[in-house]
Amino acid sequence: MAVALIVAAGRGERLGFDRPKALVTVGGRPMLEWSVDALRAVTSVQEIVVALPSDAVAAAPADTTGVAGGWARSQSVRAALRAAGDGDPVIVQDAARPLAPTQLFCDALDELERSGADAVIAAAPVSDTIKQVGDDRRTVTHTLDRTCLWAVQTPQVFRRAALESALYEASEATLAAATDDAWLVEQAGGEVRVILAPAENLKITTRLDLKLAELLLAEREPVDRTR
Ligand code: CTP
Ligand code: MG
Image 1 (cartoon, rainbow, N blue to C red):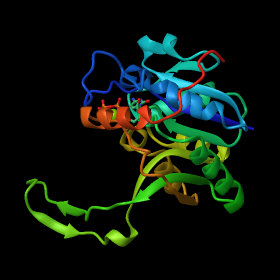
Image 2 (tube, helix red, strand yellow; image 1 turned 180 degrees about the vertical axis):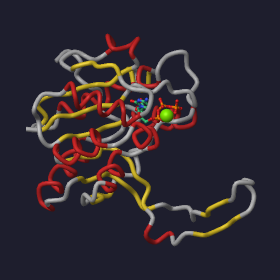
Image 3 (cartoon, protein in one colour; image 1 turned 60 degrees about the vertical axis):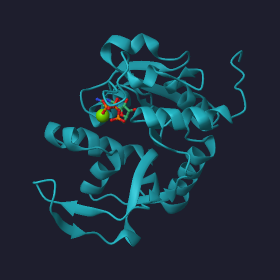
């Protein structure tokens, strides 16, 4: 059986509300709850742990375990993993991606099982050409080959042993620098595979993203909240 970790401990500074981003309302409910619902519909998920800011742990939804996150994202993942029971594999989901469909979690788990890899991550080929720009933030120094570039998202699913050793053996500096846990598994020599994420799986960073998410969630079937 799987355990799911939702990281929701960021402050959401770029979104700019007076509450943590995961608790900002989108589609009529706190952003975090969309991911909780998607994960509840995955039959192999036995437990959901949510990392929240230390002053907002009480906002963890019913039937989830709330824990205080860390000051960097991977520290929040580590705190949630430490609080989790013995489920394996481990699903990591950003609360900032409320549109991740249940099918994407299921596809990632199936690919982990089928491939024997250490991690499977949702990702999408980039549509913009990516250039490196120098420290002056003006001069182009290099243009990357777009055909092999994928933008990484969540969900990310891991064999528990691979994620534990990556998170528990990394230095605090490495954890602070990691914007993606699969990178930590790669650093430890693990095999990481991608699956194609649907275009709707956007991350809410700015007010524009929030507007887009509102439009997309308005098209979803109403959720039965009496369950
Ligand atoms: N996150 C976390 N703990 C942190 C930092 C981030 O759990 N110390 C989570 C966020 O809650 C979010 C996800 O990681 O679900 C992706 O982070 P990001 O989009 O950067 O969210 P914030 O850090 O909240 O936003 P900002 O960087 O604008 O403050
Ligand atoms: Mg952040």
